[in-house]
Length: 326
Image (cartoon, rainbow, N blue to C red):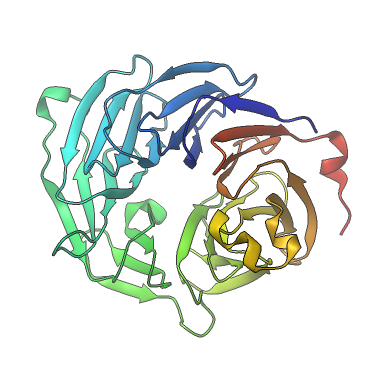
């Protein structure tokens, strides 16, 4: 499996996202410039210029017309995917961390970091199809979780919002009222910072990755913990295959920690686990540094990884991948 190397970022990658058709790949990095690539051949289509800080997260609308990006410059920007024109900028008083479109793309959920005196918060904004009507007002603001909220996403039918972050707890909120509905069980849940969260293709379950060196699979409605995948290093990224019963997990220590631990932990590979049996079924090496972002193509026939080394690698699976026996 020869990867395509996408060289366009000069700082570590933070997030990757395919559009729904799987023909475009959007990448965010600490270099202020979100980039879009052709997923099939790795050609760079263009960049979105306007942020003035690290870009932490992005999401693309279902019809691939709108891109939303969140940044440490305390803004969330809405872009026209095709032209790269900035349509709107939501300004905050703190760095914006996670961002996600609701089903139907009429709303977006945004998380902001603790900053100065303020605590972290979850904001819901309405997205207007007519630019002139776009406002920056919050439809809903939720506060409560301690520390950064690294990820937030919408539950089934946009009825709930699911958040996770530094306090190692996953929470489900009512998207209308902002009331807390469920919390993950501290016994079975993660023990350290949750760094990653991604839904399955059908939206019925989701995976989380954490610095406690594990990834876990959860039921999206009941928040029941279904599976645990254990590795030997902190997990920064995790994704669920839309095609086979596989999950992919990536991570690695910060460069400053490498000499203090066993030699194996210095290798930065994306590990594949069987989703049901929780067994490791393979790994893909390549990055020279921790893996910060992982995502499957919606067709399940390729996946991309983004590393601390500033590269995005797009891997297309060989035919024998589809016949792995556990």
